[in-house]
Image 1 (tube, rainbow, N blue to C red):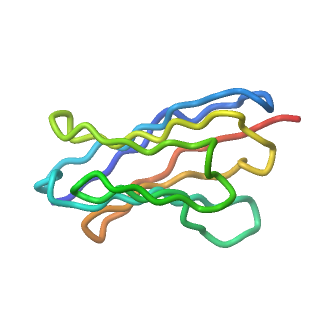
Image 2 (image 1 turned 90 degrees about the vertical axis):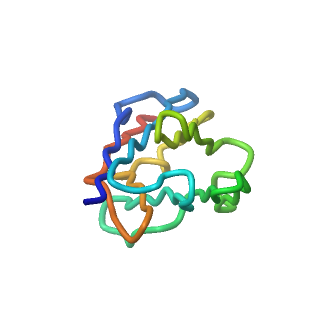
Length: 111
């Protein structure tokens, strides 16, 4: 059974940084593309960043230059390094892989 567990969310001031983690089990992790999504309060879920099994990355325009997605296949974990955080980055952040979702981790950025 595939399981994804996100962690690392917190309350941070604008301009600060956080690193989110997505730990996977129950799949051949290294073969899977992993996607970070977020859902701001009262809004629809949106794609944040993608990393393929080959390590290629893609980002939403709103986070380019500030966020970095990476993976450690030995630890079955994908990371989202978030720098220069803005209040509009406030959201519940989810990871997705192999058609499965984690429960999310809350990021709140105060102004």
